[in-house]
Length: 273
Image (cartoon, rainbow, N blue to C red; front, side, top):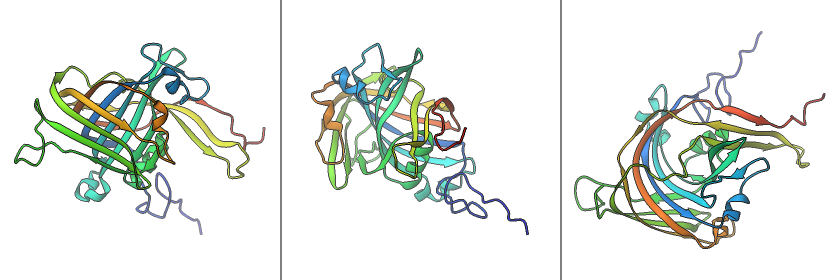
């Protein structure tokens, strides 16, 4: 008897694919993003880049930390009627880099609060870790939340392993044309997996790039921001040291993503010439 192939994009692959942690792309996203941009010593950005990448020539010490609350789904849109599979929050720290003459954005750190979001990020090269994330939601009715207008005040927190690692506060002072400049390029990420022998080799080592399509952007609310990065045993945000706040931004966004492009791949050490 011929065994039918197992189905699914990612593990576990099963007879009909329903048990897979992640549906096949394209993936669609709608959400809210709170961005705080700051400057650090450019050396603190450079140390986060693998060989072959260099900091952006313009403002090389600029960094963005972004809190986001998402609703996402596949082309079936079934997840929207089962919201535990659609809703998640994340925080990502974005730096800029140059590779072969092109400027990219790169997620140096990123945390999420759902397993499917972490698995999807690992496919795309986002170095996602599990965490606890909270951010103030704007409201249009009642007093228990800020309005998206001048004077609206927001807070955001990030914790891992029971310890707070970042806090932000943001107050709207007006509007702006863009939500900063650090997270404004195609993403360039590393996809890496150590060989099972654990002998220092990687069975997967790639640089990949991607960007969204069908992008929709809401108005940008700009304002004053505060940011605290804490020292903890398992995170390294405190390595940014003394920082200078550039500004804060709040925006509703939507986009879709499918595949990307491999721009560099190391030879597979497991393959015999």
